[in-house]
Length: 120
Image (cartoon, rainbow, N blue to C red; front, side, top):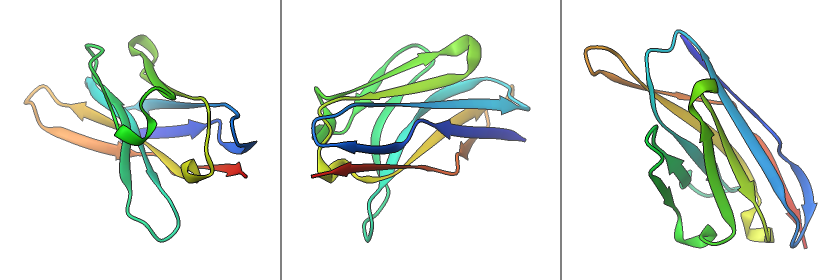
């Protein structure tokens, strides 16, 4: 079973920065995509950013130019550098890791979430 653990959330003022980290461990075959979703109160969970093992990235339009995702494949760890934070970035941020078995079955594992609160 793969475990996914996030860290780095907290309370910051508008315009501040935070760096989220997420590590996958356990019975890993081959982690392909890793990334971050977020869920604000009363809203659905939405994609923030993702990165493949080859380094291809995708970002939500709302955070382009402010957030940057990176990855350490050797450590199965993904990072989300968040700059110029806005109150609307307030949400629980969830990390995921997609594991691919030798038979090419894909399994997605989720972290428990980390709270990011941006004060106005």
